[in-house]
Amino acid sequence: MTEHAASPAAIEPAAPEAKPRWLTWIEKPVVTIGDLFIFVAQSLAAIPRPPYRFSIFLSQLEFMAYGSLFVVGLTGLFTGMVMAMQLTSAFGLFNAQSLVGATLEIALARELAPIFTCIVVVARVGSAIATELGTMRVTEQIDALETMAVDPLNYLVVPRVLAAAVAAPILTMLFNAIAIAGAYGIDVYVQDISPAAFLNRMQTMVYPHDLLNGLGKSMVIGFFVTCIACFRGYKAEGGARGVGIATTEAVVSGLIAIFAIDYIYTAISLNTASGGGMGGM
Amino acid sequence: MIDVRDLWKSFNGFGVLKGINLQMAPGTTTVVLGGSGSGKTVLMKHIMGLFKPDKGEVIVDGENVSVMSRQELAIFRQRMGMVFQNAALFDSMTVGDNVAFPLREHTKMSEDEIGAKVKEKLAVVDLFDVEQKFPAELSGGMRKRVGLARAIIRDPKIVLYDEPTTGLDPLTTESVDQMIIGARKKLGVTSVVISHDIGSAFHIADHIAMLHHGVIVEQGTPAQLRNSKEPHTQEFLATWFARQ
Image 1 (spheres, chains in turn red, orange):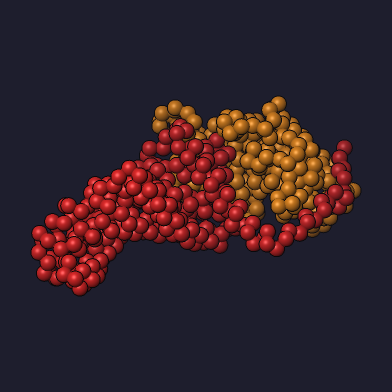
Image 2 (image 1 turned 90 degrees about the vertical axis):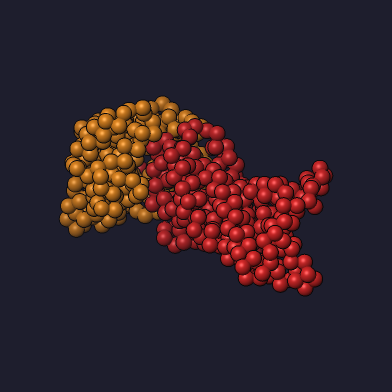
């Protein structure tokens, strides 16, 4: 005996009420930011939850750190060389070329190295993560993980964000070293500044906390921009076009996040340092 | 036993499921038949616990899936397998690694034992010596077979199939139908198939539910559906049987 149900036409829901225009303008960014914060909180909560994906973490670390060595090194080399030329030219106006090395290293350690490194990470790693996770989303591979009782956050997101938090400081150190080597080469061999003048002030003006501050900054930014890339990929929808949009949004919002987090981190660290005394300032 | 009770779900104010009531008996194959956008996939994702209903509940073997926590769902899903429309194989892994994935995640079996189990399940779906191939090297039908082998690797009680024959040629469709029938006969699983392939549905189903705009408008055996007087069912089935 077949069973008939009520006619679908009889129980069609009423059309939803139209929203005010101002609400529709702000609704999407507010909802997206809210979803992002929830995603970051869920990812943080998933970090201590077993199983621990050490082999995936290592493979991601290899991709992010080892795979980015060349591009980060090259970016650092040119940044150091350009900054050396600019600073030598500017400081030469009042005969203070001996300050170039120290000034450059402070700028590199605190700002240039972490920020430029994270820009490279967003461009190279963030786009790759958003594309990979976006493709996995639209081809239902993430749904497949869930149906096999595997937590996608634990399997896909946690190893990536942790690897980025480790890889970013490593790459920042590399950027620092190569940029200062490039600057040294330009100043000593092209601008005819003595090696002693370049290096001497560096020892007295640059403190370990300048380097540590930059490394901490790159770790925090690396973590968050990778979270954003994972979020964009994880929420991708609509096939190849959706993956493309997710990748673009991952890079754009990652770049904005770098500068926003840089501002917040710098404001907090300078306030903390001025409260507790900050050598070298 | 799967018991869907008064299930409602909407997205952005648009009703997708509107009071679904459906029972699926153990060891049988139930096909949920309907056109695109009728709510088939949403219904199946509720059975799998991937979606939470706005109202109603899904009871599987006496347990309410709709209110399960993350941990409870993880344990519950170990009893189920799902075959996706496009197989959803991990493209970075070989066929062998794909099929072995649930065992590596949830058991402490040795690699030798896992290898033997993978071979056994691939043989159930008539696939041999494909462990080292990547999904991209397989045909659509073979990928679906690998997807089924992965779904049944842990001997689930229930297997869900999401449009298993969509986009396949007639011979491959026939082989996928035989695969579903074979899985039920050889393994005794409860199968839930969502599809808009009428020919395939009437071939494999013990029970068919006709879904239209989020409502089950008709359900019964294939013979009962064939003689239905319900207008949407008649219209839908006529697209196939009028050509016979």
